[in-house]
Length: 475
Image (tube, rainbow, N blue to C red; front, side, top):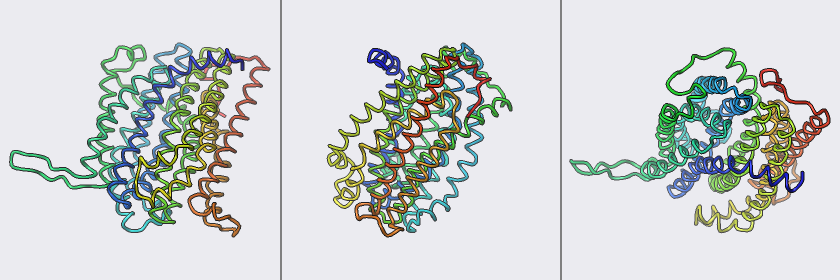
């Protein structure tokens, strides 16, 4: 792509990417707030947060991925000018979210298989259960809000979502502080002492904020005239078997791909917890930092995917190809700069989380992989999102299973615990998981971007348009 073409693509991606980035940072800041406060409560609370957070993320993102099928579906319908159909599919996504919340909550309320996998000590396991109890009440509104978020991004209106996410974060901080550390609430009859819940307070605070955020989203839908064109507002359609089937055809492979990707990372917390509370506390800090960095390529991926889906719906195959590949190039360049900067400043950044020298010593070596990890993560994420805009969802699942589960997680387990007796000292323990996870993401990036390049090249050579979404198969 020429420099002029890349610059033009960047101008189109940026207005969509920055609100998504700010909103996603606000969402991730929930975890950052939890991590900072739990670290100051106790090492046990921080360890419980790491294990419990891994359980919740594993459940939430898999279900979220299925609901986010609304993104390419609504985006293509919007590009084709079929606004009422886009609104109808969004309401169907909300019904799907409610249905998926039932098994999701059951898993959070019965986390014993995860605790057995993590082999958590009894004190940590008890705190994990209390933390997940609060998150079980947070899951339903979080999933329904995902449908609202996916639709707004698909129709190039991410600022509405960003505003609600920032408001939720502003509320999360004080509620979290009160529930984690406790407080004395003045009453006419004297002071009422609210106990310190520790890590469990983080879960309760998230539940309170998620319900309020969903309520604000529903209020906004009913008051903003923008949504009337889509048939959204006061009317609520019944679940449609045909629409649910269409969502699941695309959503199931999307959810599986995201589940494999994320569990390959979150399951590291279960295995690292076997090493001890200090190791998992250091791992939690590294995870939170890398997750914060990930928000930028994720925003670019969302923006590029939205534009590609819209151009596909409009029948402009050439522009869809152009914007999809430009998003990948832009994301990799930015990730290279950000990853290098964080690597150079890693000591100062860890100091923002904790002054405990033991935890610092556990976290610092893990960030030595951050630059390569982040670049590979950015490339594979953007390529996967662009493929989903074309409704290609099965290929990413295969790539992720091989690269993330096979190379990253299984390879990390072998290296970290030296199962073959050949792991060098620097690969044992948590560093083994991180080094192999980096290699796994590199494999995923090569596989995903290579498949995308091949598809775009074939489309260019054939010079064929893209059929209407209803006629386009899921691969």
